[in-house]
Length: 221
Image 1 (spheres, one colour):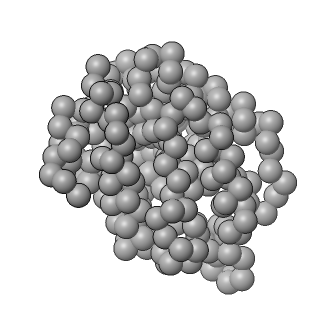
Image 2 (cartoon, rainbow, N blue to C red):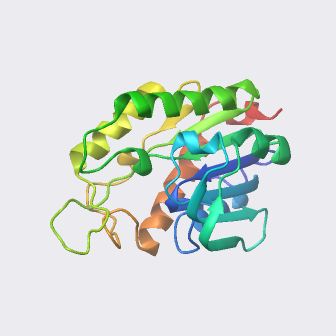
Image 3 (cartoon, rainbow, N blue to C red):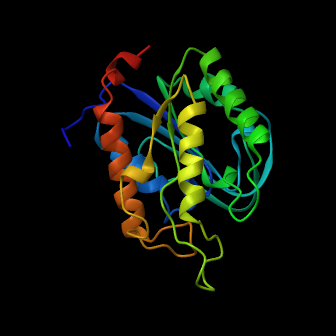
């Protein structure tokens, strides 16, 4: 990865539970983007769907990091902050959305109309602020089969959700996390959330993908 490829850019990263615990994605991704020269604001909300970032929604846990701070991690009820408020406060050049697993309805029928409405409302809200957007889709997890897999992710639904997002997140640029590993390559704690090695690998792959975007430097307002 080239050094300091994101110098001059301010990035706001929002996401679901992957972005909400200190041992999860939020720390390595925030740190990797910072090492590339970006000023980074990261906000996570456990269980938050795309539409929950348009309102104040109570969630069971959350996290927030700004710049080089060590972050605030809340194990207990907190609320989402509407994306328009976050953009007005942090003034990012780019919003990075890490949402996929919370909307994939693993083990259930996929609520396509609801998912489409949630996704398109969030992307339109971001676009209305004239802020560039990147949407990161779900990575592979672990299939049903072990009792410890509380959040088991069937491979076919992960692929379906990734394809759904790829077709519906415009004008955001889509990053397909299923391209970063083989199914079951990254070990999980519960079917969905990775061990430290998995999160480190995912963070590095996301960062490299962002660095490689041809127009990323032009996102500077």
